[in-house]
Image (cartoon, rainbow, N blue to C red; front, side, top):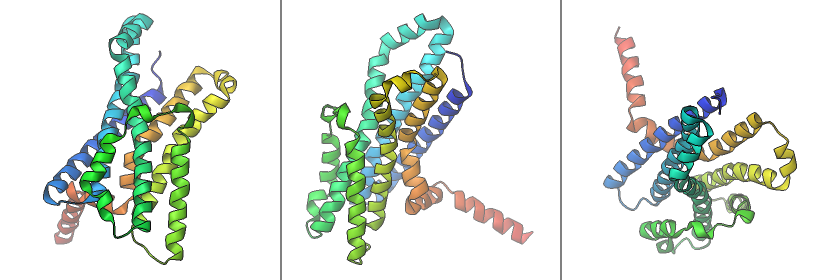
Length: 260
């Protein structure tokens, strides 16, 4: 497999997103040690751990293919795949399926909060952690996966509409986050649907198109945490920048220029 620009761009972006997930996980873990019973961070912890495993497995799968093929051709890749290809495939599959189920769990959480605002104990910190751990890969049915993010998106849109009618803003930002997550996850599944429903059209495409199509689909999953917790969520972005001192450096530069 010749090394292409799209492959270099893919690996670079995934490595950057992996570094972001590790940084976000460290930030949340530090904040969790100081502040207890902060329910939303449980979801972030689970999503970042999932994201780290998923991105690392994709880097090993894609880059491992290129490196092993470059060393010993197709035989080199076959040896690499036989060595631990199944394990990496399982981890990468788990890494993109689990956020889909987490998204539905967050949707159920939001519906429960709106319907029963006084019964918060059902979705307490340890309960949510237990629900996240209980989600298994065996629940997955490839044929119907598209319905998870799409149905979650519809339910969250209805929740936002209901809360607008009731003139309440409680958990509005969290509902928007879950909705955006559902939309984002749908992109991957729409690509999967295209391959499943129109296999002849997909097979007729060039190998370069198939590679780029695969890279784009994988990037939607790999960039999920960055898009949701940095691009969309202002509070998470602000906390991230403050924690790693970006604004402090900016303020110091302004003070230095002013003094000069």
